[in-house]
Structure formats: structure tokens, C-alpha cells
Image (cartoon, rainbow, N blue to C red):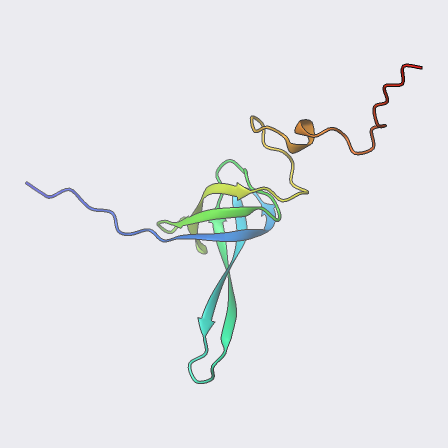
Length: 116
């Protein structure tokens, strides 16, 4: 009898898509804050990860959640979990309610109800 294998802890991170020019691969920039070792200073460190996006769901500027996974290629070690927030220039997702359809157009003439 062998014990069932237990999966290790998979880290999740949140970042912004900086490139969507490859098929099924996105480049995601993750920012973190770190204290300087000697001087009382907070540093903002940025790291870019290649992320596997099977359905090409994310686009440039989207806020996404990624999860660590087994190596998928030479540089890909993360996969896309979900898109948290769409960029304003990204195409709408089919099936999600559109913000533009919920609001009346801004250039629409004001409604007047003159009875005279």
C-alpha cells in the first residue's frame, strides 16, 4: 500500500498583463514591496512571469491571478487562474454583462417632456 501523493503548496500571485502577443502565453508583471537591508527604505520590486493562458482569455492591461505549476516550457512556470479586472481597452468577454449596455450613452440628448 502506498500513501496517496500530496500536492505541494502552489503560490498564487496577482499581476497585470504586459504582453499578449504570443499564442496561449502571457507576460504578467507582479509588483511587491520589500525593505532595504541596510537603509530604512521601502523598495518596489517588479518581476515578470510567463504565464500559460489556454483559452487566450486575458489581454493587455488586465489584472489577473496566476498560480504556480509544473514547468510547461523553458520559461513558463505559472498558469492563469482567472481574470480579476478587465482593462478598459480589452475586448468584452462573451457571457459577461457589458458596462456600456447598462448605462445610457453619454452623448444622448436629454429627454424633454414639454406638454405645451
